[in-house]
Image 1 (cartoon, rainbow, N blue to C red):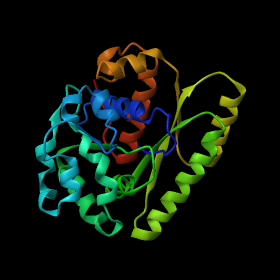
Image 2 (cartoon, one colour; image 1 turned 120 degrees about the vertical axis):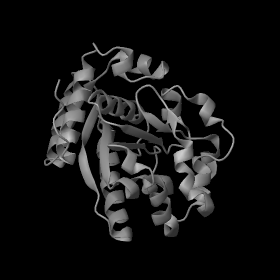
Image 3 (cartoon, helix red, strand yellow; image 1 turned 135 degrees about the vertical axis):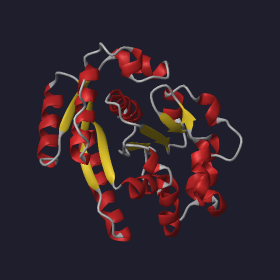
Image 4 (cartoon, rainbow, N blue to C red; image 1 turned 90 degrees about the vertical axis):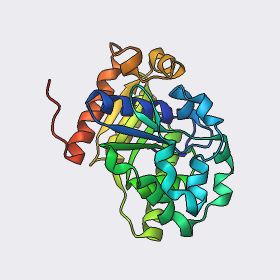
Length: 253
């Protein structure tokens, strides 16, 4: 989950996509790579953010602790979580592009235990974001339906091209989540722009709902907080499309 433009609701989208996948009976691991720990807070795990070492910082920066990521997994009613930690605020200065492969291997060490690993990246481009993208090779893009998103998407495309060139990997775009959509002319214009730029990818529309913020404050996704909210169906459609893209069988009652 990546977009360097702040304020897109990236973390709220990430939590609810993970919640939708869980609702579809998928085993989900949520990894919070954001040093600010917004997802860790939004999943009700603030105590983990202040936990003593070893933390995600140690796993990413200390080669001798790369195999300990499994020890960091915390259970949440809806998914397993690797929380962020206050020490992650120092991570960018400790990381190098040369060590990217080793860091990504650390994040992938527990992937075989899950159907999905959802990585919430920081709201900026840097070595932590590169680590998440290198490990997953897939991006889901949250974006606001406002003109400033055009520049953010262009920067995202440039960043993906540069990372692919540097590392020799291919990064797939899974879709765009147009977030906080309203019924204005600007919103409709931007939705058309998303559909044009991402012509080969799905574009989902998540409308503004107070319940999304209330669920975040309660440490839950919509599916735990109030599954009757209409946007829950949008997130379920995202989960269904991801299952299609990754070849999972359709969920049956």
